[in-house]
Amino acid sequence: MKSTFKIFEANKLITEILSSDITTDEYIKLKHDEFHHAKFNRKFNLITDFRLCENNFDDADLQEMINIFTENKGKISREKSAVIISEISRLKRITLSKNLSSSPQEIKFFTNPEDAQKWVEK
Image 1 (cartoon, rainbow, N blue to C red):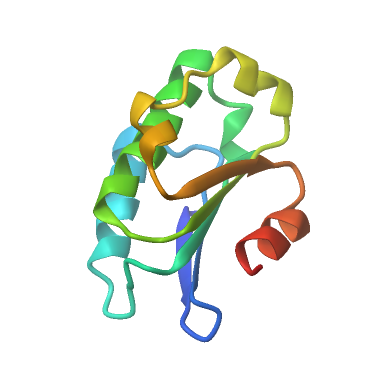
Image 2 (image 1 turned 90 degrees about the vertical axis):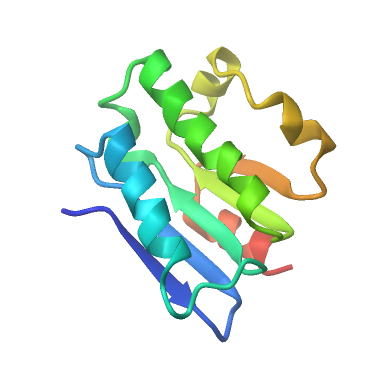
């Protein structure tokens, strides 16, 4: 499976599903393609699903992917971003960006896609 993104204009939502073998360079390219898509809107909320790839990452690789995710918040003006992962316990070993706390954008982590979607659509 290839990593993909979808833009749902009616819901003001972007979803990303990352493949099991994605690299940081591929994730950066995915984000670039997303930002340049005709339907992309900086205000749309985001859900990114890391569940397929996270088991293939050691903590350093997962840290790098989370860094890419959080660094891109400066390029957007959305209110909410949700990250779906299978092991919330891994977050204890991950450092979130220092700028994250000063951002008006909320980022939350979920293990359940339905909970993530409910939260971003509130």
